[in-house]
Amino acid sequence: MTTPLLDIRDLRLVVSLGRSAHHPLLKGVSFQIMPGEAYGLVGESGSGKSVASLAVMGLLKRPLAVSGGEILFKGQNLLALPKREMRRLRGNRIAMIFQEPMTALNPLSTVGRQIAEMFVLHQGKSWGEAEKLAVEALGNVRVPNPDRRAKNYPHQMSGGLRQRVMIAMALACSPDLLIADEPTTALDVTVQAEVLRLIKELCAARGTAVLFISHDLGVIASICQRVGVMYSGCLVEENETRALFEGPRHEYTRGLLGALPRLGSRSEHGRQRLVDIDSIISDRSKLTESRFIAPRDLEGSQP
Amino acid sequence: MTAPLLQVDDLHVRFPISGGGLLGTGRRALHAVNGISFELAKGECLSIVGESGCGKSTTALSILGLQEPSEGMIRFRGQPLAGPGAPGRMDRAKAVQMVFQDPYASLNPRQSVRTSLAAPLRLHGITAASEIEGRIEAMLKNVGLTPEQAGRYPHEFSGGQRQRIGIARALILEPEIVVLDEPVSALDVSIRAQIINLLLDLQEKLSLSYLMISHDLSVVEHMSDRVLVMYFGEIVEEGGWREIFEAPTHPYTRRLIAAIPDPDAALNSAAKPDLYPTMPQLVGRSFVSDGSTPPDVFTAPARSELIEIGGNHRVRMAVA
Image (cartoon, rainbow over all chains, first blue to last red; front, side):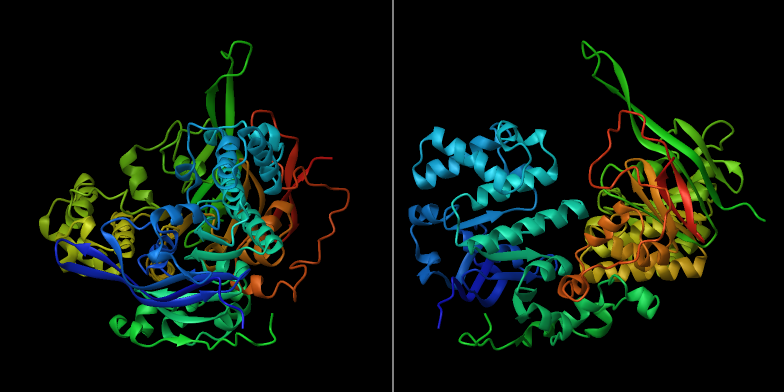
């Protein structure tokens, strides 16, 4: 039996509201990601999908705090790791790309230098060597004229190019896990399609596992092998992507899929009103009491 | 034949840009909208799709009178809506209204819903308190809110409810045309479905005409009667929703549709290697652009025209 790369066990997160009051954000979330696997967390605003990823990166700031559970990365509990150790891991073994590359990049430094910094910090390369590697990294994410583009500042690039720079930076040290939090939400559709393909191909080629966070079910379906559906701080359903889309079991997942206008459905079925999630779910507060987690056969023959 | 509700004829919008020339003093113009013509019929939903910078929002702003066209004519029921002989803002407001993408940014945080909805009525000469109250009450019910919520402020509502308020404000003057600028793209999936359903219900109930600006093609397919595909200031393809989604012809339209992250397409891509294998025969014609390399917006584009390739279906081809 292979050990999971990332094993989140009963993770609980709270936001503290003053001295003694807490509001739960994650109410015991457990899921695992295998080496090389692309796992999607899907949910609406406030479902807790982004804070879960920040917890893995060790980037939670007050008033957010972990109140229970474990985050095991290669068997090591990240929550118990000293800050120094966590810093060594972050960017090196676990990397992250964000929704808005303009705010994640340093506007005062060329993109080449920002990528090169990864090699200097994590691999002890000299700056000269690192900058050559940075140009190579830009080429890998298919930025045209990488040697010229390396000298650009972020504002000289389009949104799609900036997101490619983010990916080049994130994958610079060939991490084991890439966390992508809505990386294509701010992009135009055709650019989004290119960036998604890039993430998929590069991660598959390097064996990098992906934790992909999105509200967009179509994006999740196109990139992930397994999906977890989050609602109000709970994982309400988890299954392999195809099984989840073809046979959603939890009523919230069913509502979510029915609420989505599907391409081609008007041709087939005519125009129907979309499912109103509130009309099929009588009591939202009861939603998180039930959950459907498909049993996963870790030793199964399926690769 | 009756005149169409809205008629846009050869609309051009150019923005002057400094820079260029020997000392950076030359004046150039960015051609944001480059000769757009279309009509909107009563009760119809026409969508303009395209990516950032294609000119779709500029087109909408021109219709709303918020952007002066450089050339061309916009007519409402045969009367000019912009340019010489156009009515003032007040009359235009009764004809065309807009629903914005971000309802929080487009509602005044210091005004209660009642104040926001009453202002346009007062401006248009409706001053009797009972009538104002009655119309606000009816409108709130129309958009799925309760009259009791009229006293609340925007921050007291959820995103979906705020968009309902935005719709109520657009409809309070009973316009015939509503411009919807990305009306659901800021909303969560479940809320988005509710607002789409609401917009379709209101369209039927009040026989509204929608001009929808969107980049979300699955929403466009669901809601539209006709679709215009814009690429760098020009219409590259137009047709009924069936023509556009079942037989897209221009390379850019195909690229756009192929790029939609649709769960069914993503899971069945192996089963359907080519979504649209049949290409209509277009003898002796070629496309100016393949839709993947952007043209230079500062130079005059290669000569092209919209060619009819089927009932209601036109596509831009090079002039031989």
